[in-house]
Length: 376
Image 1 (cartoon, helix red, strand yellow):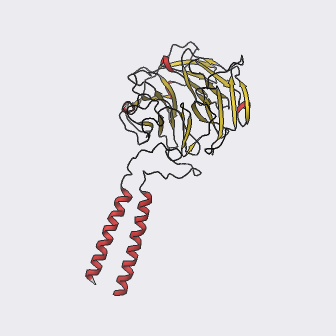
Image 2: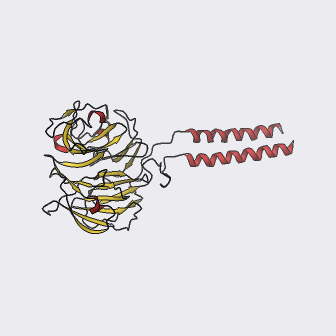
Image 3: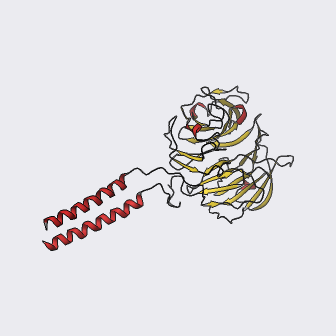
């Protein structure tokens, strides 16, 4: 009986060791293949650039080819048609190219026209919760920046306009009605495309980074930017970065749009994506200058190679707009903090296997103890 019990506990110990290794082992970082959970049904000839969740809980997509903004429900399937189409026009009723998109705190929709260097504002009443096909005309709130303007974003009562080929970021103070510009004083912004606020920092995506074609993310303190403008002709505030990520240089030629998930991880798209086949990367908020991404969506050299706009919606799903003609949704790439979000069933977790092995160990332990008691 002693030998039998020894053999039983030897087997039990081996299983326990296996369970412990699987339970406590750090999950391996494995890239997700570019197979989306949803690919939106887009009208023929659409060239989507930016994607944004609106205050009405719908997904808004800019189409640069046709000068329209499309609206979809967040729970869209592959066959869902847009519930609204907005043909954006300036005050002369001329159509404008729709590139960057964002919503102000008061619900107004702001759209940039790229090479035209203009940011247009559209009334919330003309867009939010409106269905069908409509012409919408820009209101009097229009900003002209002498540069290529790719995107616009809001934080509190401030609007940020990214002047791409001037290496500048313009700030509109909506309370004081001031428009002023700031530049980075250390390495230079070098073609800023967009940004996102993480804590008390503005994280800026630099398309060309510290060297032409390298790609970079910069952290800039909000306290040095907001409320600092004095006149609309301000020559520029010097705002040194607090840190940056340079490692994107080894992942992609161009760093474009950036969003954040519920845990402030950064989701970054890389336009072009060559020579390394990594096009959408996820960085932790405490990443340092040479940090590798904690996860990536990879391709075969062509998939996702035209990724531009990115959004993490209120259900923790990642939307990626490709100018080549697709808007893709990935349900398990961002951290899942919303109770209504789909569970993360990706390949990077050992939790499920640990649970199975743990149950097996408990079962074997129970049977062994019961048999030993009966024999005694």
